[in-house]
Amino acid sequence: MERIDTTGFDRKIKALIDDINEKRQYGDPGLEKRYDQLLKFAREQNNVQAMGMAYYFMAEHNYERFGREGNYEESLSRAIAAGQECRDYVMLTHGYNFLGMDVSFHGHPELAYDYYRTAQKYADELPERPDLLALVMYNTGLVFMDMAEYEEAIRCFDKTIEKIDGDERSPYYNRLRVLARIKSGTSYLMKGDTDKAKEYMETLKNIEREMSEDQLFTYYQAPAFWIFEMTLAHALKDMDQCDILIPQFIRSLKKKPVKTEAVGDVLNVMFYMLDGGYEDFVAGAMEVMKPRVDATNILNFRMIYARLAVYYYRKIGDGEKALAAAADYFDIAELHRKESEKAYAYFIKLQAELDKAREENERLEKKAITDELTQISNRFHFNEVSEKLFNEAWKKKKPFGVEILDVDNFKRYNDGFGHQVGDLCLKTLAGCLDDIMKEDPEHVFVARYGGDEFVAVYMGLSDEQVMDKARLIRQRVTTADIETGDETEPITHISISQGIRNCVPPDGSRMWDYMFTADHALYSIKQKTKGEICLLNYIPDTEK
Image 1 (cartoon, rainbow, N blue to C red):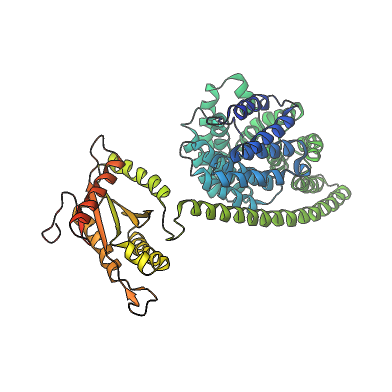
Image 2 (image 1 turned 180 degrees about the vertical axis):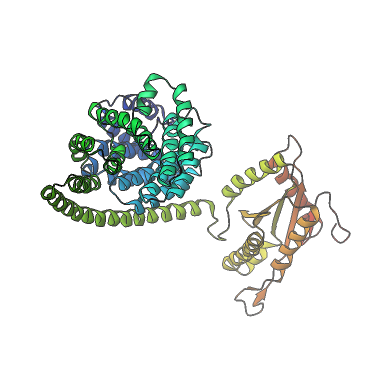
């Protein structure tokens, strides 16, 4: 994960995260203690977002040091659960991307694709961070490459390029704009389209001229670029260039340890080199890669290496060693099969846990914004939504309307028939309002404001359309039967009074101005008569 934005955090937590950001760049050995300290501070302050960060850091730390043996999944699961609770979409994108990378390394492309799809969903919620979507799309493209679905891979890499090219401030800028083009060019090669591959190589050469020496070493002396350059030369039948590049590639493997994410690419290109007749160089590369493959402790890489060994020994005619390598391959494949079963079991368990946590969060969120009696939005939610709708109407110069309505003579029902009937009156009115909103959610929002008062917001409707909505509410409410349980009057009906303001918000106006005017309109009805509608600046002959 990139440097964390600490804006809005408590001073103590902010200082600690800033310190962690700094020390992570250099791999400080004391980081583990700082992660524990961050978790402690976050728990003390009940800061869910900071807890999620601490768990994510721990997961990343354990994975880098111990791989799957470090039990990173538990910490990562907690990080994702915290991200869900506080809607930290950056955390959720990174968390699912992390899971996708892990299962991809271990040879489970179907699971990887599912995790990346979830990461993409959260990245889509972050329009201000196109680089995160670019990162996820790049990794998704690698999955399609592994499955030889090159058209889909190219689509993902092109999306990566589209998102990252204009985001120079991103920590992934140079990495993704180079690697996505390398992988897209390589995918075209696998499809047999050397012309498109050459176009990508030319673009990469142009980018190369812009880069510093450190950047050139990082991206253009890395296995991915070597592999693209070698396979392109081989596809173009430029054997002289191959004879230059392949020895250079082998020497580069000996000089610098191959990163985990490149191990699979290096092993797979050796099959290509064997087909080209470069057995001697493959032997040297296999010697270099064997300890690196073992060090990853990733069965998928060991399985690819064992399959490569079988292919190599058959190629040079050493049947005995080919048989021994085949036996190794079988043993590793069995271990990989068992690992796959565990990976799928973890996937199912994780999804069940996260679904449960998400459902609980949704339940709590709904409870926080829902009126307990009527089950429509409460005053808190109304204030939040109406402000957003008002600002939208002001920016787009659309009509905006607010209606305040209440039950006429509510005390008669509440005291005369009892609180249960009073509650039933309120629920009946709320149900009619809710139905109107569900029939036209684009233009209507309703809520209980308090007591027997309810509110409706109208977006983008003319005066006549607003009056039609108000009349429909009145018609449905006044014709609804309400059972009283009283033998002398078993069924009763209620009437409502409605005050409305509707117009394009003038400059300098506020939501409160609409509430005040609508309330004034309602009051004017209550003073004269009841059961009527008053829309300021709209007074039909039948409704004054």
